[in-house]
Amino acid sequence: MAHSASLAASTPGPVARRRWDGVRNALPGYLFLAPWLAGFVLFTLGPTLVSLYLSFTDFDLLRAPQWVGAANYQRMFSSDPKFWASVSVTLTYVVLSVPLKLAFALAVAMVLDRGIRGLSIYRAIFYLPSLLGGSVAVAILWKQVFGYEGLVNEFLWFAFGINGPSWISNPATSLYTLVLLSVWQFGSPMIIFLAGLRQIPRDLYEAASIDGATRRQQLTRITLPLLAPVIFFNLVLQTIEAFKAFTPAFIISGGTGGPVDSTLFYTLYLYQQGFAYFRMGYASALAWVLLLTIAAFTALTFFSQRFWVYYEDDQR
Image (cartoon, rainbow, N blue to C red; front, side):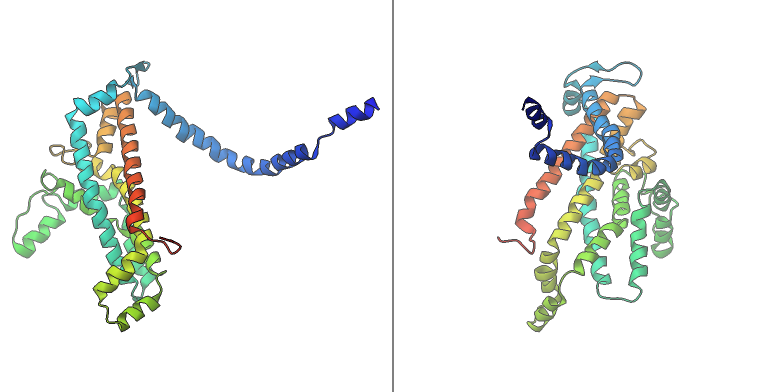
């Protein structure tokens, strides 16, 4: 009797068997996820936590980090004029480039949505700048186009007899050349807009035409409201990309952010502090401020969607 009791105690119950079966069934999935999890911990989560620690230290890559508390953040907001200059340049770039890019992308998508011949060819051509726009070669080409002897000034001279300045070297215009470069990379949001336009029922436009609605009324009362989720999606993505812009400013300004800090993007200033002046602790603090700023803008955009974004299953 004692033997049978001990045997029953050692035999797993139905609850334990179900748990073991669940673990055994899930084990292959965890094994397949293991490479990604290892990469996430080693190359994303780990460096992120280390940078958070370094943001509270004085670290120059040569000596061990020395804890300084919030000194980096205090210096940033109280006694660093270049920090505020980079913030101003970056916010100006975001405010100008994102709406212009989205508006231009939507306009091109609406033209392509009319069913022109060779649509796939045009779609590929317009999408190509988005693939090349962030490259060093395109930034160098852009620098040449807007230089003193560039293509833009050649056109102005032969067409209008105007001897234009070096648009890149002029503090009044250098940032706007980078805005134009960003707008030129409209292919990615254009493809998304085109997919969204294809989901709008044509019956709505036909009914609106019968009722006498003009094209402008169809745009404001049919296209834009039904396309609002796609606009919201593109707005979030392009805003984040604009805050992270680095390569064009680095190449065109030669890494200095000039002339007169007119192209000193926040990411470029962060790079200077970390890899030119070896102030890695201060650069880490700058990186965390950028991360929190992007998170705040993204959260604000998500909060605002309740006022202008409507979905098909919206019960409001």
